[in-house]
Every structure is written in C-alpha cells, then in structure tokens.
Length: 263
Image (cartoon, rainbow, N blue to C red; front, side, top):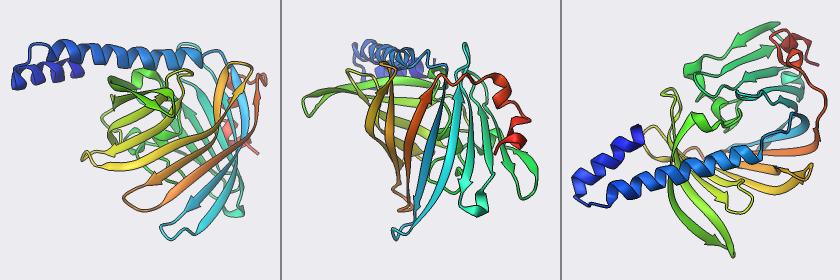
C-alpha cells in the first residue's frame, strides 16, 4: 500500500499516464526477485559456522573477535540463531540469541557472563551496534521477505553478468534505515552489495559480499562480508569458515535457557 501511494503521488505530480503502471510493475518485479531469493535458500534446515569479526576504527587500527554461530530454519517463520563469543577474554561467553519473525518485532536476547544475566534487546533498539561493530542488530538476523517493501530500479550488466538493482524499504518503523539499495546476482539470486541509508536519507553504510561458495549443491554463502560506515570512517569484516549443514539442531538448542548453557 505504501508503494502504491507513492506511485499515485508520482502520477499526480508529473501528469504522466504511464507512471503509475510502470511504478506498479517495478514494485511487482522487486517483490518477485525477493521471493525468488528466499525460495532458493529454503530447506537448509540448520547449520553451524565459525566466524571472525575484525573491527577497524577510522585510523585503521584493528581488534578481533572469534565467534561460533548456529542457525535453525523455522518453517513458516523467520530463523532462530545463536552467536557465542570465544575471544577475546573480556567478551568470552557472551551469547546472542535471536528469533526472527516474518511479521512483527523480532525477539533478541544478550547473555552477559560477567553479570550472569540475560538482557532483552528492546525492539526500538534494533538499530544499535552489535557488540561494537558496524553491523546493527537488525543486520545480523535473517532478512525475511515480509520485512520490506520493494521497488526494482534497473537491470545492470556488470562484467558481463546480469545484476538486479532494487530498493527495499523497512516495514518496521523502529528500523535505523529509510531504505536500502540491493545489488543482486541475476543468475544465482544472491546479494552482492547493499547500500544502507539513514533515517535522514543520507548514505550511511555499504555491505559487500565476497568469496561465495555453494554448499549441498544449493545454498550459497559468502566467505567474507565487509561493512563500511561512510559517516564514521569505521568498518567491520566478518570472515566465515567451516560451514556445517544438517547438524540435527532443534528448538531446544535455541530456547531461553540455552543462552546460559552456551559454552
């Protein structure tokens, strides 16, 4: 409905008969591309993976964190995931649990071992930094189709490959973004780059996906994700290793008490 109103406004302002039709077509194509991306990644069931987080300040100085992550696919809803920090010593044992939902606010909790307590992440704080990185809490959860509305901008040719370029707009009003521009591989339907715009409409961050590998002859995962904050000069790199699919994980591995059991 939001995008349809935008189409109507454009038609009134510019008096172009085909504007509304073209806009509706771009919305429909944007949604179909998002749905196809989701369809191709369905069925992985669960996985475990090791991750290294490299944080850089505006002067290029680095600090590193070592994390284990596990994810459970939930039919009919968003994924459940848990991240467990192993290094450095000051964050060892910290665990982050997330339930992503197709509609409504996600549920997120952070276990702080020094305090021996679980802190719930408020839905209006999803734009906050995840453990001091350039990734926000809303960036590190599964990106469900229903979380956005879409508009296809254009088809590009990059190095002889088809790339879809489209805008997506967060449905949740507590999002830290006004919009995102997503560059998608037109053959494999995987994201290549995302530009994030802040609530004022200014370019805030860029996320680049590198070194894709295919697992189980179906599921594509990037070996590296680079997030650059254009406003602060800081950046964060996530390096992924040792993907293991179909590990027999269950909902019990992701319940509230699992946070305190995490080691």
